[in-house]
Length: 132
Image: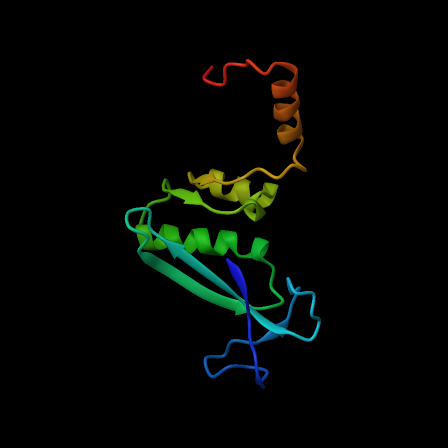
């Protein structure tokens, strides 16, 4: 997902009903109107299968369950592998997806205790066989 920028005079709501909103800009400009664009592609050729835009004041981490549910409906199955960024790593989202027979591949944030524990075990035993 990416938060896009807009330039020029932007009305409060686009013709399609999307509300441009002040969000947290990576440029740290509080006056920038933004939007959030979610794009899901297939693994077999990166074919776009779903997209949605959100107001710029919506955070990424509030969109994953909705996106997963939509992809599950499109695919007609729930056991596909959902590959996404680390913002999906919340107990609520991971429990929801796993509880619905889904699979997620993501990067675990360093703030998770499991990440710290794993890295500490590698530091203490650098020859640890990760295959077991």
